[in-house]
Image (cartoon, rainbow, N blue to C red; front, side, top):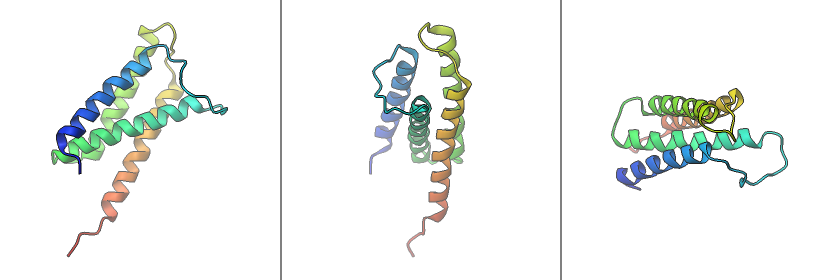
Amino acid sequence: MLNKRVFLFLAITYTVALATICLVKNDGLPYFGTNYEDKIYHLIAYAILCFLWYKVLNSEKIKHAITIALVISIIYGTIIEVLQGQLTTTRDASIGDIVANIVGAVIISLILTIRKKTIVKKL
């Protein structure tokens, strides 16, 4: 298993990379022909963000790590969307993107919660 320093490095690097990708002009993402690709990218990106911060918090034995990671992801995603509208001329803030960010974080949080409750301890 990866040690907690590796997860902290991954979480910080991913968080910075996500902000960079979201705040610069980016026409290089692959297009698969669906109407909701941007929302799918947001959903996946914030699910990964939530998961990485959960792993960091959980490795530090912080209570309610799933809930804290969820809140961090939602707040971060909302701030990034607002910054897109305020700081960039090529990107717009979007309520739909915020919703996709939240849905991605909630989905991974639910998966983690269900997984945590269904793990059977060895006797």
